[in-house]
Image (cartoon, rainbow, N blue to C red; front, top):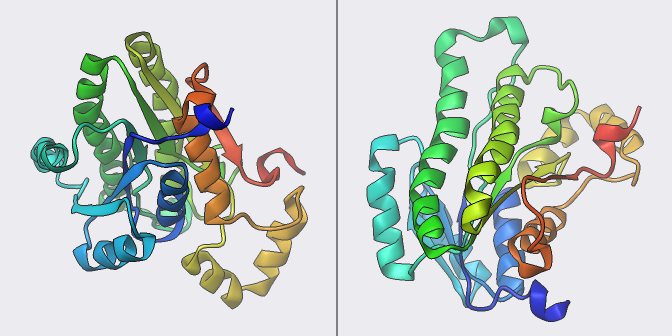
Length: 252
């Protein structure tokens, strides 16, 4: 099992890898032996994150909202770091407000980034994976797919779209050697979430009561799940969305 769980010799690309959950994913992929390229829009944040991650980590500027430039960006990244063996679609945005208060532009902005941005990047990288006959693609969705999350209609909709895309993509790519899976985090203690919960202490208490494990998750919890799904230890797993939420989506 230790051999199968190793990612030695693999190259992973993690979008939104400079902070929060993406950074935790990068840490665990590195720990499993992969070379990891963290990607995002803010080069300064990525540079500092890659330095903290240490040996085996690199960074690349990549804006998934610039759909027409994604193919060129992928070519540039792979010309430097080689073919991508593992793609983790983690980057995304939120806009929390009451469901009836979104205007059309705000609503579509989330879909253009979270759904089409992730698809456009996946399309370019998956072509190479399919030609080589191997690869692992992992989408970071959300517990919001499985519960009704107040003031999160657009975000929940984008994550629901990704959840459905996992299975549709898997049906086409798995016969070509490319596994497609997802991880659905619950409340994870990133710096942004911790600050939000400090402002509303009763919300933290509510989350901890609802979680069967009695606590919030950590970026490491999500990262370990991603590293498992990316490895040969999960070689017979595809079209799965793994909840990493402490049981929140199944609790009353």
